[in-house]
Image (tube, rainbow, N blue to C red; front, top):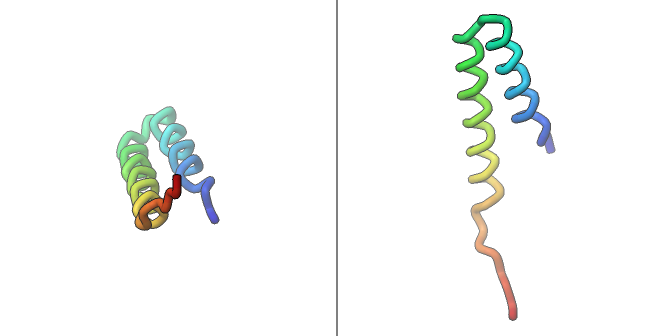
Length: 52
């Protein structure tokens, strides 16, 4: 779907920190972690069905 979103948020956070806007950088870092964890729980809810 929109798998580039965590990378885009992380890049924007790095740019904010580089431009001395630490508050916005921390907010974007938290948004990156939130999106990543939310997508993990969305996609990792079903058990794997292995058949050996």
